[in-house]
Length: 243
Image (cartoon, rainbow, N blue to C red; front, side, top):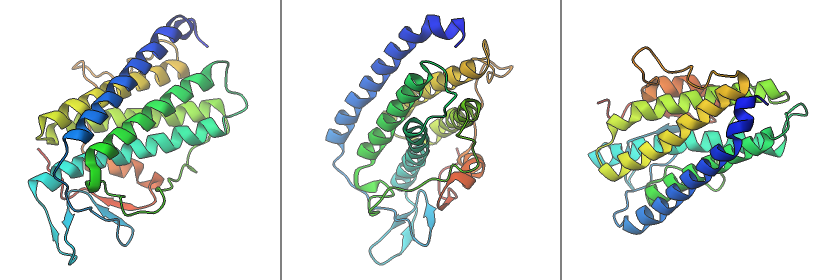
């Protein structure tokens, strides 16, 4: 492990715990405030259409509220993906993982689990997989998870996509509470990305910052295209707002 990481280890882990606790508290607040529930958007015929409301008769409509929940479900899908990845890695870490790196991966897993459960609670009955008896099973076979470098390279890919996804999704939200919550998650995801970059290459923690001083931002369409091989379902974001 680099000198940089050794010096910053305790401070970073302490920050992560505080960030996770803050979000967990917000979860309880949001869950308690939510009193209007949208019909669940089901995963039917292996296709998930985010931002679409399906009635009992099967008719599909797009409303402003369903679009808002569609953006939250989009974030929920990304957090499910990241949580599943780190859960799998922590359960079966590569043999050449360096000292203390499993603790980092465990922290990352725990944060993603908090993010996932936060969004699930915020969405309530509108969470897209409420009717599923088992969680989605993601496909990580394109990653090399049997080596240290393979695990951290995969983590870097997922974290960079996650940061770009949140940067691109924030402008699509119309409810201030949701924007503030996703902003908090995005700030933690950016720190995840910085850590993962630093583990792979010293002094590279800010390597994704562009000439404008900002991280990349991607639309939901661009993000789904990047992760579609990892998803067990086809995802359509055509009904989400674009601006």
